[in-house]
Length: 630
Image (cartoon, rainbow, N blue to C red; front, side, top):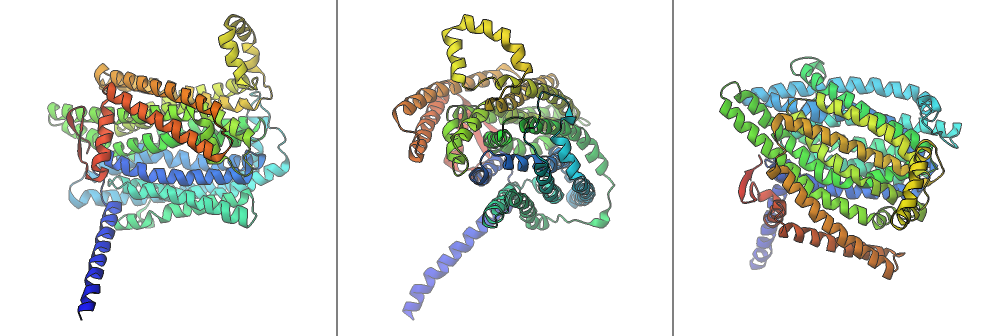
């Protein structure tokens, strides 16, 4: 009997411990994240895992197809289905659904929840009809759409798709017909995301993209490689990923009481406001997607593999934007919306209450912006210096050769401007959404569209005249007078004629960054006119300090990179990993040390965060003052 108790008691303790940990894990996944930074950190961790899966996905693409015409066709076919989803759902979640759901939840007791549930069902019904109709139209018209995309019917911009046969067009149409199923499924999943996030539960929606990537990976491995279906397997992987994206959110939605009621109808209280808020943003995204379409068509008119190199570079540069900036911005949106909504209500009672809400709104916005800049600026330096080893480590295998590595790293370097612009815009646009203003972001985005399209055409022409930029840099520093004279004489010809250099695709990346930075300047200028947020103390001084710290980080990392590259064989994976870890590690240490030295407040904040553990933190000291971000 003694032996029985000796073994059963530890077993009971172990079972109790396991049960307790499972309960904690479940509470973590399904519980509310009240603090903006805690929600953002949770999303960052999950998004980091998702991005690892994303890297596995694009590594698989590179290994199977390289930067090839076949993969170009896949990316081109994906453009229209992705455009449909991005415009309708992407334009609605942040601009209309979350603010509208938050407003409905503002009602007292269960009444607010009931109103939100009804609005949720009606929005699902509306999206279902819209996407079924659009999907059917694309399915029927796919051959004509594909032929139009690879013809000169879009206008004579100086590009002409080369070596694009009728067989390529037929294959592109086949892929498009398969992948148009994806936005129909993702539209429902997108509404679930908004309904879950407005209740301050961010973990499950952050997990959903992971399953989307896993579906595409399965498509690549099982369908493309094992079953030898080629890029058709990737297309079916996109559909599988969309199904998983929806299924992983359903249990949480059901737990929260979110139900899809087909009989709830299509119109009613709240729907009109959603439409009113969404329509301007939808038109803005139409403009942005025109950029994508034009860039796709221009890429297909360049050297074979240019579109794939552009997509690979785009995927890599989005890592810091999505992992760092977008998570903080998305986590801030519900709180910004609620604070501004509270300001609107208080303004009818007392001006003092309204002013206090506005101060809280401004403080949350500025602190979120400075946190984004603190993380994004060193990320840009990291990518700019280590672009070659990054591309080689992530993509270098199979059909992805050294030439593909060089051109993709070139595109990635020019995307660095875009990283800063997209990161700032991700928060600034959400601030406008929280104020229920979707018109200004739309107008500004159309300005950006025009700049980007013009820039894409002329900059691809410009870069197509260079085959080795080392000669260019050498001429700038060693014979500046003669170089500048030749440069101005030939500039007009370079901008208006197309040569055969693969470097031309870099013009698409640089043009995107320039357009985004101009949008940032306009949006911040208008926001400052309204809220007076760009003060020297809270905006300019911290920004200048971060730029200084990033500049010092760049100088040290670049020196070490060149020193390492000269003295060590970087043709092996181990050497590349050593270069990446060594130079990158020193860069991070230098950045944090500089931040401590020049008293950048965010470094203390994130060190404190790392020490205490994100889920135990509610109020953190930033620059000596307690900040409550909930």
